[in-house]
Every structure is written in structure tokens, then in C-alpha cells.
Image (cartoon, rainbow, N blue to C red):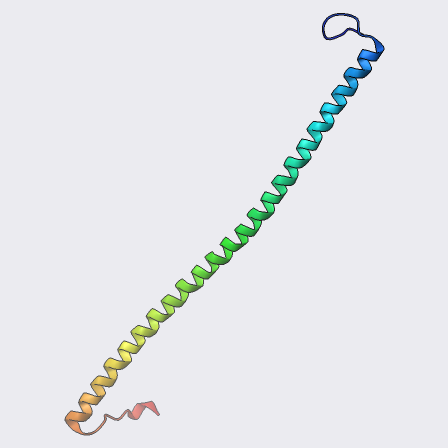
Amino acid sequence: MVAPSGGVESRAEMEQRIMADIEQIDALLAESKGSIAQLKKQARSSGTKLGELERMIGSEKASAEKDAEIGVLKEQLASTKQFLATLIEMYGTNHSLPTCSGMH
């Protein structure tokens, strides 16, 4: 075999070079495994954070829906108050409530 320096490589040198290459590959594999473990951990953490964010968004949507319901109920209450005030005024003026003959 030809050595990387251009000379002839002995069997012992070739074995040493191969062993050094294998050790380097092993080190790179270990480093890669560590990186993969770190990335998996980050992915799990991101998944948890994403779930929390989705729950928060759902909570915000529910809150907005409840706010809209409250707005509608406030409008209905204001309308009912106005109607009641009109009835009270009519009663004070006429001393009798109007009848609703068609509402039986």
C-alpha cells in the first residue's frame, strides 16, 4: 500500500492508520448520538411548549366567545330595562298596565 506521505506503508502502519480512522469514526458517532439526544430533548420540550401555546390560544378563543356572549346579554338587559321603564311610566301615567290580549 502507498502511504499518505507518498512512501510505501508497512502492514503495521496501515493497521495503525485504520485503527485511528475507526477511533475517529467512533468519536464522530458518539458526538452524533449526543447531538441526536439533545435534538430529541429539544423537540419534546418544543412539543410541550406547543401544547401549552395551543391551550392558551383555545382559552383566548373561549374568552373572546364569552365576551361576545356577555355583550349580547348586556344589550338584552338594556333593552329589557328600557321596556320596563316604559311600562312603569305608562303605569304611573294611566295607573294601569296595558294588556296583551294576544299573548295567552
